[in-house]
Length: 303
Image (cartoon, rainbow, N blue to C red; front, side):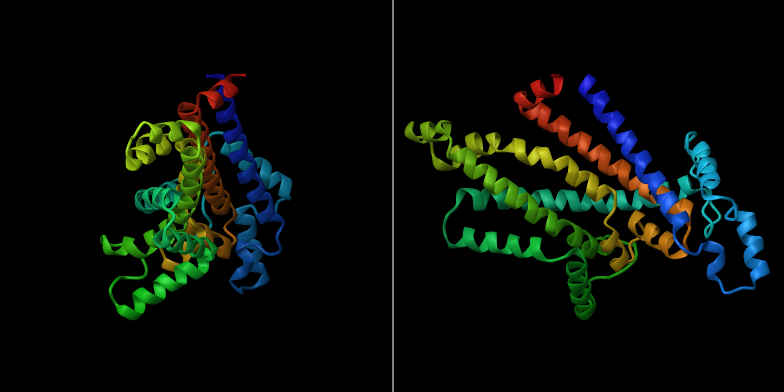
């Protein structure tokens, strides 16, 4: 219980620091929301006063902090709606995309890692090479490649959110690198597990190799995968900035991009806080999964 409380407290501190840092950095950057429309100095001054942007930075921050304590993150300048409502709506869209990417990456990455970790033939080498390529391609390039293929072939829509077909391109852009990462981690962990004396003893007893792999090696190799799995979950649910921008997916990443362009500082802080919260929850989930799978980690957490 103490382990969980400590991790939860650390998560709250992370969210607070990220949101506060976003507000302060957005205020310290040159220019502001009122000055970007090319209007007269009098109109700009009136808008800055109406929005409270003419007050000292620390006073603006103190006002925002006082409201944030009650979970009121202010109002978006450009949308003229509460930040919490905007973030909640976009977070739901990101959650749908992240869940689809999580299921797909797990369904591909874990069996892929078992195949490369237990095999030594040409096929295993090819699969390892594919995962290395997917890990080496930056998210921007991978997203652009998928968007280009979809637009040139006309097989799939490349932007926006509509029917099931709209999920394919952004889901693949998110899932393929994660699947490659899971493959690498699962493959190495499985190789280590299959080299342990327990697996050797199982082979000596005449147990078929497939049972040694799945019933002995794979179960023992889960702890390292679970240790990073929660972080993957958190990073997916916090929204991929690049993928959502490239595919025009209306999630947290796209909302953050629009807020940064408009210098909508309270919306920037809200998006940053939501992303940090998802990542913190994912990290906590990793710790709990690892503690559940590995008694040594659970004993270390209590100490």
